[in-house]
Length: 165
Ligand code: ZN
Image (cartoon, rainbow, N blue to C red):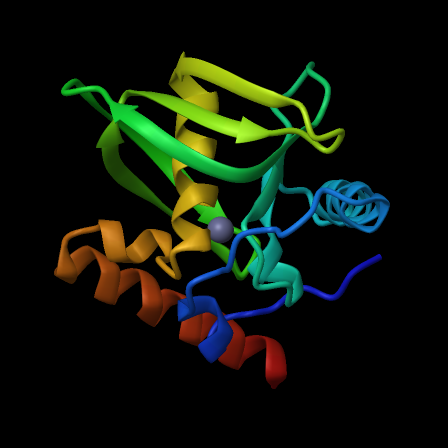
């Protein structure tokens, strides 16, 4: 199991660098990330969240196999937007509605080095955008209106504080 990077941590705001080669080591990292994500009860996990500042994330939609995204590029966002409740394994215990494009088209490589293209909407498009943001050092509260983001972080601090008591 990999250790999760928990907010506040400066690493969460850094840009991740491209994966240089899709090696056995990267495939193993992806496997460990999937394990860690599942154990933590999450549906997505980015490299930076386990201290690896590389452009890789994994996700798993219920009832489907896990998927690995390496060096992803979102090449299209829909004009149509949707609201979904989001949470983050790096900001545990708080959830909030976030407005984002409803559909995306993404190019990426899987853990075997195969180039892929995916156009999707709904829950999967939501997870992809949340994880993709992690690679650019953006956290989901930064996609919220400032008042709502402040309330979310306040709730998080309070929750953290009460856990330490
Ligand atoms: Zn997250």
